[in-house]
Length: 167
Image (cartoon, rainbow, N blue to C red; front, side):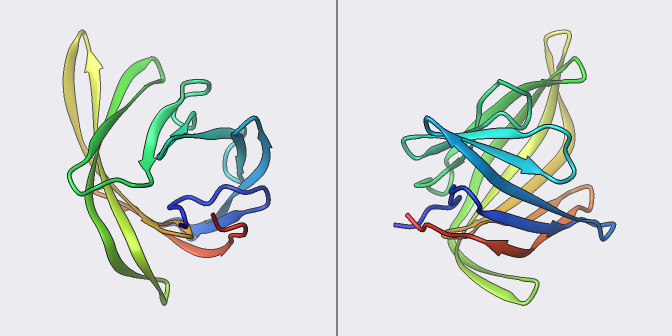
């Protein structure tokens, strides 16, 4: 069965941010099940690995692998992404909002889409503080991330991709 995030060397996804800037994520290497990815807007590569049906990344904090996607998730499943950014302990609480829906992005219809929603918070002096920022990530089975939106007005669609080696 196809995965929600096909990881094979050479796969790449191209997106457009709100300002019209185009950027790409590319799988450039794989070593012992850890996939190295580059982003044309980032100075350093990030890594992704899979354990069971869960995808982990160190894109939030180098070397700190956190779960970001579950291939067989059900509506209501949830997890937290914990990392430190700019010296601040940060938590992103993720909930699966829907699975198996269809979504139209940039004129292309995707089926079997999973919607993940994340709520941002920080820990300051031991107290969790809700940042009030909500993110939505839409993953299409067999393609990967097709759309990112947020309560800040982000709308980052997939505009092109090369995905090979279906599972």
